[in-house]
Image 1 (cartoon, one colour):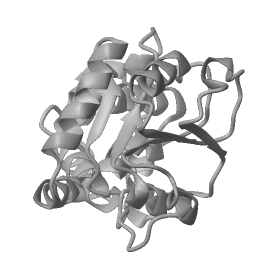
Image 2: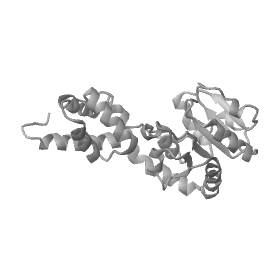
Image 3: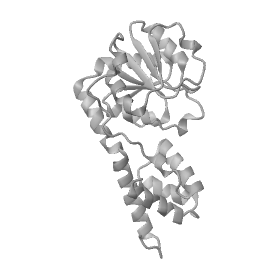
Image 4: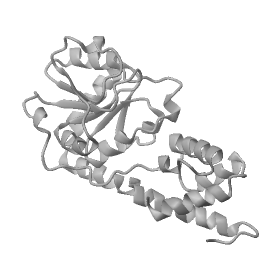
Length: 250
């Protein structure tokens, strides 16, 4: 575990008697918001710092020189998603997209936990199963668009899809339903509020993509790595701890 992570957890362990409001102040100063802030508040206040690792996502070097072999023969463009296929994945949206664009390929990677009747019989929808995390950059290399097709419900304000930053780190244009965390990145992501909105957003993303835009997306994610975010949180935590009366930094 990163020594900085241990120091941050140690601070919260010592300050476990703090109210959620005071913890929120520390976390707000760290620049966290949206789902990350809410998760941080809960884990820090309830567990004295345990689980603080949820604050950061490792997004280093998500590019790949070679696309995954099982994408090579698929008609392009390839619209891809990876993650557990659970009830929050809108398979009706995938079906709408597949029927609207029968010449496109839609690739879903991940363990299937729900019935997939909505997309059964659609020859351009490819359920490839679960892949190991280290294999995912090669799939991103073979995607033309990274998709986040989540149903918008009461869970979504607490969802922080790491794949969002991984897609962007790989340079991919990202199209999503209106997941609150994705709305924080309007310059880099397109959001649709209906099935047809998502369809049109994918069309625009394909038309507007370029090698230069891909480089820009990748560079924008450099500040989202574990090391960068952890260093900033550690700086804020140490500053707050140093200002507390009667407290000494360790």
